[in-house]
Length: 121
Image 1: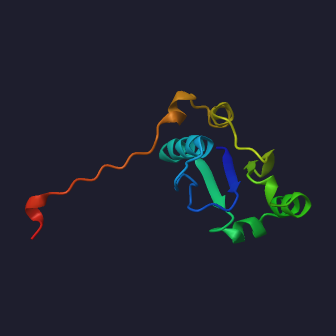
Image 2 (image 1 turned 180 degrees about the horizontal axis):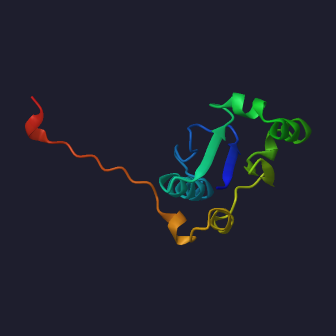
């Protein structure tokens, strides 16, 4: 099973898809990661603001950040090998790494909540 780790730059929230203007690239990546997680794939995202220890623990990521600075982010590792620096993987990349169709990666996360008003007092 492939292991993919995405080291994101500092963002306002864990996915980067919040705020007044949402970056479509971040939305695409969030949807792909969500779809892969639902399938049980080994994919992790680490954000510089929330997970600085993950950046510090990884020698290759630390080396890249030391040499190139934060503009090198995002950094993507596949099975502990650097695959991309400064760009997110394409859906074609995700598809090849995890042997899924690109269409499967486009399913956006949804959250359905229901409230039974009869149970409120």
